[in-house]
Image (cartoon, one colour):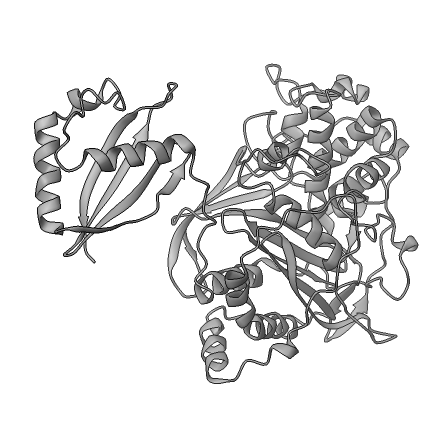
Length: 522
């Protein structure tokens, strides 16, 4: 079993050895495409990440060796671009073809978010609504008998969030990958066995995403494969990403294997079909990193021109927790600390939030012969991806370990939000009033609740006491926004500091409704 605490050992070894950056395999220059992601460039931050690359590479390679992966490809995306790729082993054991960042792996259920993105694109184009009944586009569903007489109809939103009432269908669904439209419709005509009524609970369903593929086909007038390829993949520059393995260059295609009785046995590759919408995509680390960068580049919300194939707001919408899945009371991180972890499902994405407020978005994938996973941290602007060619290869553990190592080792912090003009204005107005609050009630910057909630006399005494302890103010820090209407800053005195936190109202212009001041040690 992989011992996640090995990370400490890796870090120690690394710190005792000279960093040989030439050994870190750098990502090749990407192909030119229609869409070019904005670069939130922070050379210092990326530089810190790069000092950890020998450690990260060893972590991935040790994991591959321990889990007996024939081959593995992995990469790191930061500041909305691929900054590092690595690999181990072979895509084809018989021919000893080594894995590269251009090797094409079937990524299984990682495909689901592309299907979800296509649905949102069609929604934004006015061609469907998420609360449309699925039977509007798949007529055979009108005759499907639901679990109870009072069950609501299945909607597109239900399908997107695994809440249509279908039973969990791994690994049965994997073996349906290559079936045709006619076979799928015949299957549905026989009826569906439900485990729940639609719209009340999460249960993972490959059938649901196969239905979404059918809806994309009906609405777009072309196959879901062609629509996703032309509307999303090509504009992102993912020109080597395909659906059918027989179309892959033989030297790049990863063959799948199963470890059985002490040997690798090659798995028969599955052809693409109707169920490919749930897990049929074949791609490389080079290509998929572009998709990851597009997800990261949706943050923060801003006024920049839309340049991607899908609106930034739709990408952020995909990453929201639309259906609660589970809660883990004592999730254990690589360093040994534990935290609660809330897990949910977005639109084709798994969403997790830990007790420290960190949000993770991504998806795993598993098919006969393959296992994969990608994970991004939108607030941190970083993500990792790993592909392997072993049946149902579990990749979550190593990606959690790598992300946690990067954050701790590179001392990464969430990307700073821009300060809104009104928040900055209120900060400057506050500074002028402190510590004596002269003319505060006539300043017109405070909301109607402000002084009734705490009188001017009380506020004046508190601030004067704090200023007396702090001594002469020698520095005022930059405002740290929590969002566009709340934030904090520090008045640094000769002896100590004063942290000031304030929030604004929803009215226009926004006024100060809450203000807290407290001493902070130097």
